[in-house]
Every structure is written in structure tokens, then in C-alpha cells.
Length: 359
Image 1: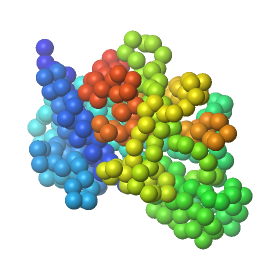
Image 2 (image 1 turned 30 degrees about the horizontal axis):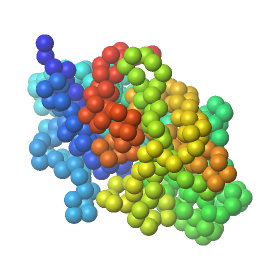
Image 3 (image 1 turned 90 degrees about the horizontal axis):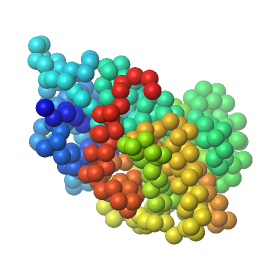
Image 4 (image 1 turned 180 degrees about the vertical axis):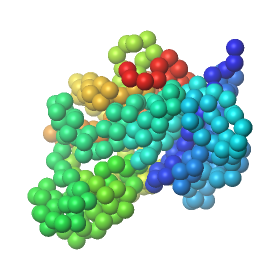
């Protein structure tokens, strides 16, 4: 029998293009080529799909972020058959797409919807979970309705900022200083700022709006950042929650920003986090609840704050978490006995057994 064909898709037209390539490089190294026929496909920064070759760069080199090499053959996926844009050049069936992608037009349900329309199995959560998880404002609404504790926040929509900026600023000031300002539908800490007064708040909103016209302003929460990975099981057992880990910023940054996440020696992860046993168990249960509330599939990472008063506060869920071998979710699962190659294989196997369409 022929090996299952796995298309690893990465890149995309958003500010997390480079992050996607870093994860894809790790996945491509980890996939068992004796078990799967692997097809690397990059999405360029202007949205074209191309087959990439051995010259593709996946890592940060000399401080330069990687981008998809645009010189490859243009391809399309109109159905489960991958085809070249060149007339008559078919490239065969695709059994599974492994999207190693983040941010808008990728992690937000758009590529999942495309794959559903094409009838192709894929790794990770479906359209609804992906879309709801990507929109931080909507995500908080859903999690609050599920009974998870969340911090205070203000949503700034494009029309609000354009027509009623003074009201927005006043509502944000009522959260107290400092506040964190984020694009509502971005990740990897792109476009996030910490504001300490009205002047820096206005500048922070403008920066966030460069990434998304919808912006979130959050009250600062004093506490340690603790995270948990949740993984769907192959045997229909309840989702597996990893041991919690604590993220510690080492590079002197004011918060867990892009450089702390992706540049060498800027952060460390303590696993298991130094938490009371009952708090660790509560955190794991809350992580599974968040995962199941959205209807997630595959692997997700759920982030919390642990306050000095001993309370857990939900921060966010990431339905397609950073996926280099050194990213937080893979590290957490490695401490739970699932190493990186096993995790990659597990996710492909989950996708292979899942039928396209409603579920």
C-alpha cells in the first residue's frame, strides 16, 4: 500500500509568517518519511501556494526572519488532489494537510474552511473552534459564559476608535494602569504594548491597529504565567492535560513578547510549575474545560495567570500553538511522556481517522 501523503502547509499573509516557518522546519524534520510521503507547501506573503525545495530557510539566521521561497512551482488544492498551476500537471492525492500556521487567514478558521470545502482531512481544530479561539474578545465572552475566571477588558472596534475615541480612552482608563493593548486576532505577541498613561495608550492602540482593526485593552493582572497543553486522545478517552509549566522571561523584556518567545535564551520554561498540588489539578481541569468549551481538536495550549492571592485567571487558548520542538506546548507534552516526533505522528493519525465534514 502507498504511504499516506501529508502536505505540511506553512507561511501565510500575516505578521506570523516567520513563526509558521520555524514550526514547519521542526515538523518536517520530525515526520517519519518511512511512514509518510511528505509534501512541503509554502504560502507566500501575498497568498500564493508554492512547492518549496531544499533551499527553503526555516530558522532565524543572522537576525533575519525566514520567508517562503517564492521560486517554487505554483500549486492549488481545488479538491483532495494537489495540482500544479501549469496545465495538465497533477501532483496526486493529499491524505492529510498539516497546517503549521498562525494568525489571520490561517489559524482563524479560514484555511480550515478551505480544507473542509475541498474535502481534505487536516490536523487540528475545526472552523468554529479556530475562529472563536483566534478572536480574543469573542474567546473571553465564551469562556466567561462557561464559568472560567477572566480579567477585565475593553474591546475597541474600528468604528469606535474613529468616531468615539474619547469614550474608548475613558473606558480604558477605568481599568487602571498599566493596561495591555493587543490586536484582537493576532498572536505571537505581535502588535502588543504595555501602556502606563493616556499618551502611551493611544500609541499602543494605533500600533495594534496596524495588525487588526479590532483591538483589545486588558487590565494588567499581577501573577505568574502558567500554561497547560491539552491533547486529543486516539482512544476516545478524555483529552490529556499536561503538567502545568511556568514561563519565565529571561531577556529583560517587560512581558512575554515576540523576542522572548522566539529568539534564543530569552525565556525559560519550568515544568512542572511550582504550584500547590490542588492548584495544579484545578488548572489542568480548567484547561480541559476551555478546550472542550470551544470544541477543540488535536493539540491546544491554554494560558493562565496565578495571582499572589492563589487564584487562577484564564488568559487565552491557542488552538494552533507555536510548534517548534522548543515551543511551550511540545515541551509540556514531552514532560508528560510524549516527545516531539511522537506528537507529530499522533496529530497526523488523529487527522487520518477523522472524516471531513460536520462532526
